[in-house]
Image (cartoon, rainbow over the protein chains, first blue to last red):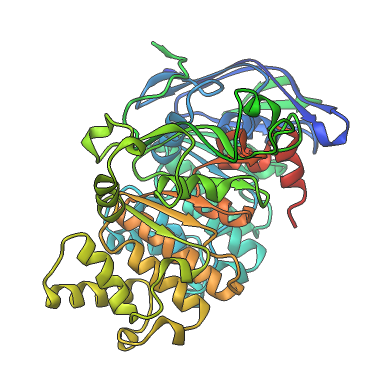
Length: 237
Length: 286
């Protein structure tokens, strides 16, 4: 097994110019590695830097210093902190997917199309993509009458399922997922856990944030506990 | 092997270098005297107005680039210069489909510029009156663009026009009506149909959804997104509306007093803005 992600001396400090240059140290000195096909759980209190770490890896946040070496299919080992934007976009299209806690979509697109869109970008035909999308939201137990409705009107749990579906439909090489089971009932939670395990079987590496002990126990091969922007301990399951 | 370079690759469709537009007389100090650091775009020495200066960027195939900034920051000036609606003061631009991007398009003859405008570019203006001829029918407007792009067969033109109106969800039965009888949202969609009529590799959208109500706005956004998916057109989207930028674009430039103050991936600009002005812009978002 090769190392898919190596985070070295990562530091992220928010500098808020409009608040008299107030500084917020979100990540102090983060170091860890992830192996291919591994599911790593990030834990810690609210505000400990879990989401910041994930967003810095996805390049939504710019790191102040340090390295994030990612083993990509397209470019080999690439430093996500300093790689150029086009390479990041290419990786996001083909390999790395981020699934946030909140669903943000273009209004007036149906649930099936929202999910299918992720793979239509890859130029496979839309009819086929819609079929795959339909299968997936069926598996996730989304009521039939919602399939061609607009997700902005959905309940929290339904939106979350759409969000998960569009993240995993492309079978990414590296999945970043923030609280995938937070607003789901036990049964749906188990389905989501199973889907993520299926992805793992196909070789996907997953970085997972969750407050839910059950999800963490079921999924993670390794846990990383964050406190005040630093890694407190790493636990192997 | 470790990829660590930040230098850009060579497969852009549009490359803009040092684009500058100054109104009035200027000296060599004019650019240094203005900009976000000086807090103005009016030169204190000469009184000339620097609409935009030192604008450099690249656009890649199929990419959507956003330009945000307040009124008067130079957003529209950039696309209007690129569409030859406005003369440039300084700077150069290269487009890949024209002689493989080897010549500065601003130095070409008017004839060549017309060719590029008609064959290689499309523009959608904020006000449909700028993009449409209101004394022609909506079909006629589309035909105008197709005629300029060397399609002369009337039957084929009508076929293509009804095709485009279908795509932009304008009822084909209204093809022979004047756009003046259309609602604002419909006019905007006819304008989009006209702009994409010749399958341009480059499309400029200048505040397309401003002034439309939210339901029509959603439809226009959906349309643009669909066209981008389907045809893979590279676009520049100018808007002061950050939600439009978030939904449509991959990368964003933030403009202030005619300069680029920040550039980056759109989600990075919206969630981790670095420049003081971008932080102000993002934190003012409803």
